[in-house]
Image 1 (cartoon, helix red, strand yellow):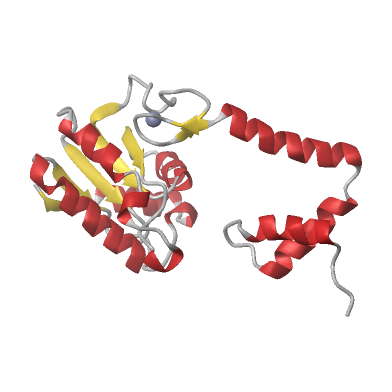
Image 2: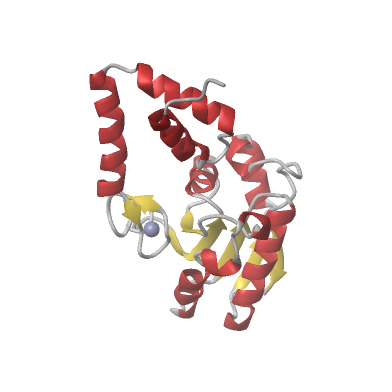
Length: 201
Ligand SMILES: [Zn+2]
C-alpha cells in the first residue's frame, strides 16, 4: 500500500483540527501547501505568525483585536448600557453590519457543546458577569445561534445573570431555526434585534 509521506501526514493532521475540515480536505490542503513556491509557503507561515503575534482577546468583551480595549469597547459613541452577547466574533460583525444595533458586545468564544468538549467553564461567561456587576449595563441581549446548543447556551447565560437586576432579552425568531446569524440577511438581523423579547427584567 502506498502511504503519504510523514511530513504530509503531519501537516494534514494539523489542518484536520480546524473547524469544518475533514480528513480528506486536510490531506488536499497538505498537498496544496507542498505545491506552493517557497515564497508563497513563507507568506503563509508569516501570516499565521503575525496573527498570533499581533491579535489578542479584548480584556473587556473578548473580541479579537490588535488593540486592548478593542475598537468597539473604545468607541465612545456607542450605548454603554446595552450589551449584545454572541457566540463568535463573526456573529458580532454580522449584527453590527445590520445597522440596527449601536451598543457594546460580549463574545462568549463558542457555545455549550459537551459532545465537542465545550462546557460552560470554557466560555467567557465569568467575564460577562464581571461586566454586569460593575453596574453600568442595563440590558443584555442574548444573540446565540437559533439551534439546540445556542438555546441552551442562552438559557445558561440568562440564569447566570438573573441575580444582578439587568433586563435580559433574546432575539426575535426572525432568523430561521438551525440557521446561522453570520449568514442571515441584514434586514432579518435588524428585525430580530428590534423585535427582541424580554425574558427577565
Ligand atoms: Zn472589546
